[in-house]
Length: 413
Ligand SMILES: Cc1ncc(COP(=O)(O)O)c(C=O)c1O
Image 1 (cartoon, rainbow, N blue to C red):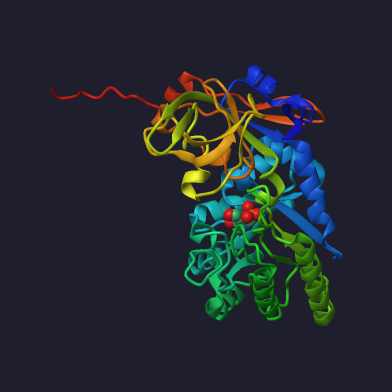
Image 2: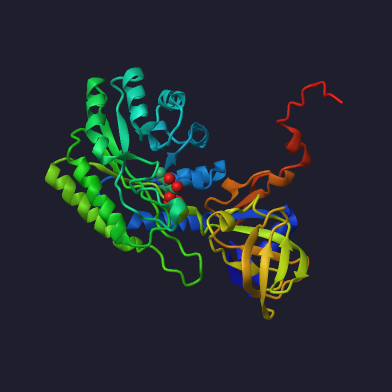
């Protein structure tokens, strides 16, 4: 979303016009931003074989997956549903890395049937695999025991995290796999999201290399993701150039020392789609309280839960009245919970009926939406080469009843 004179636009389309056409609340994505982020990330690495596998949990709309495919990306999937979506979007099974956590063994077998690359992250899954799929190679997700990430909920590489196999269990794992002739062709780690400090990435990277030295059949090393994107206008971000340079150098050195050419993989979510998304809502009511003025909007935690779930900051602009005097508002939702998007935030004077736009609404936003309070899910629009496309229709009242079976039960009384 950029400012053009008095207007906020996406590839030349005014946000107000898009809302007039598609209604509100509305998620709008900008394909140019995704392409820019993808190209930037690709450019920072200097290795022979690189795979960028989009962590599609961030935003799985099939048109976004098709866009990623057109850019040359692979897919990091965490559920059988995501694998099916990626296949439907045109990805080849070997472009899909399945990295689940605590899934049923039947889901592992289903993924194997679909021919995707499988990453296992616990001993039970490994035992199951050895018995049911002997001889079929896998990757292992290791837990590097490094604490990194923007907050507790997104720090996933420390030793008490549920993710990955702690290094001290690797010998046991190795024995199981050997007994069943299962080769380990990949090692994976992901330490968290919103990691600012490149040295934390590199600390975990060194651990991955140490482990990789002990596995002789490796074809790839997957360094996960967690790159921090700016939320505040002047926010610090992960120094992606430094990260790419350092990891490439370490990776090339490792390959040269070991005498084997591996593939370097990463799996970014936020970095590719966060800034590409804008969420637009309409103001229903302005209410003066003792310590704040509330701007109540036609959405809530049911559509956009990150501010409540992660305390995440999202810049809010008044699209309808961008250049008026700044006043402090608490922007809140219509859900019967405390769903505060921002508390006492300076925003250009807000009137009922104004459109407010949230920036950085591409990653983990629509994907976490629900029908809570029996509210309907919003529409999604992708702007590509200047043209807006509706990529998900707005839900209708009928959608609330669609899955209810409503059996004839004889109620007492
Ligand atoms: C295994 C794995 N890989 C990649 C990602 C993407 O992380 P980010 O969105 O911070 O790039 C996640 C995020 O939860 C993840 O769990």
